[in-house]
Length: 285
Image (cartoon, rainbow, N blue to C red; front, side, top):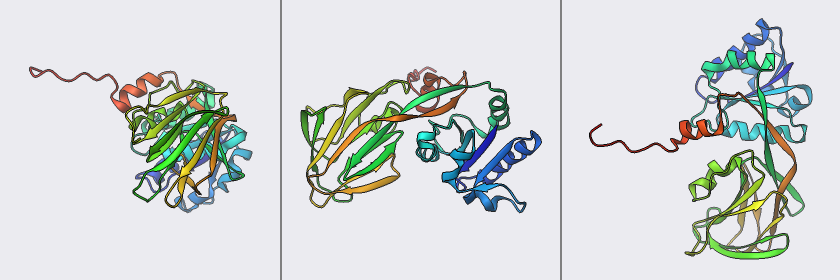
């Protein structure tokens, strides 16, 4: 087993958590590489690699931070599909379920093969001969201009509708609990094969989120924008879209494989992270 270690060093206690992983690897004689941006965590010489080299050299990626770090790790792994174990040293941690308290136990379970791999679909967006990938979602919005844009949506060449709105979210089942949820989209089990189109503040009483099967090809055309619209992948990578641009979104040929432990079901995470189904307290309690 060879581990690749990625961490958001700006998170509180990140340095000490990374040091614990390094210590565990030494004590258990496990090979590892740190992403080279972690070189300052220790005075001792540690094995370092550029982030983009880690999926080529390692059997597993340990991603420590919040959900943003996990999303970046998923795009980094790409077609290599190296399994990722998320350790939450951020805030919500919907994707990074394990905590620093579980760290050594989680690593031991990984070493012993006591885990399951959960495949999640990746979305692929193509525009202007560029390709982008996202685990959560693609957002097409108006950018910094406080005026609506006009979009049209088609599936497999079949026109569906047009939107005058602040934008449109195309989310995966994994992303159904992120921005799409905030604008009224449905929650899907992350193991499902589907896409969700959720309009952002549509100027209509008849615009609702739509769910599409995984083999559909979605085309979103920028019919009008006062300057340009913005395409953003997972809230981290963006590009400008002039009026007339068409963005094609599909399910990618590769997926991301997340390391899961049996006690962390999707529904238990819903209850613990989003307080799903919590009943209001009675006045006499």
